[in-house]
Image 1: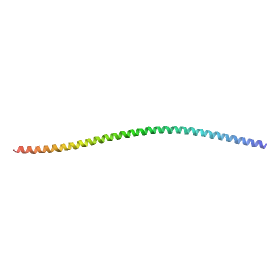
Image 2: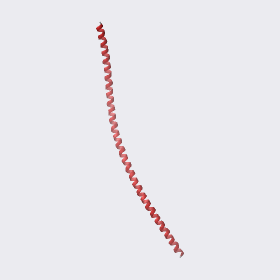
Image 3: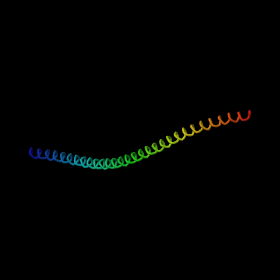
Image 4: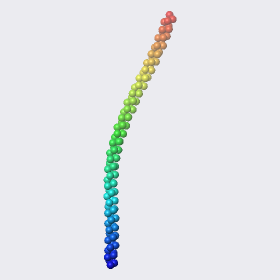
Length: 108
C-alpha cells in the first residue's frame, strides 16, 4: 500500500515536471521566434541606416559643391564690382577733367 502511494506521488511529481518542461520548452520556442524576428528587424534597420548614410553623404557632397559654386560666383562678382568701381572712378575723373576744360573754353 505504501509503495503504491509512493508510486502514485512520484507519478504526480513526474507529470508536474513534464508539464513544467513542456511549458519551459514552449517559452524557449517563443523566445527563439521573437529573437529571430528581432534579428530580421536589426538587419532591416542596418540596411535602412546604410541607405540613409549614403543619401546623407550624397546630399552633403551636393551642398558642398553648391557652396563652392556660389563662393566662386561671389568672388567673381566681387572682382567685377571692384573693376567697375575703378572704372567708374576713372570715368568720373575724366568727366570732371572735361568739365574743367569745358569751363575754361567757355570763358575764352
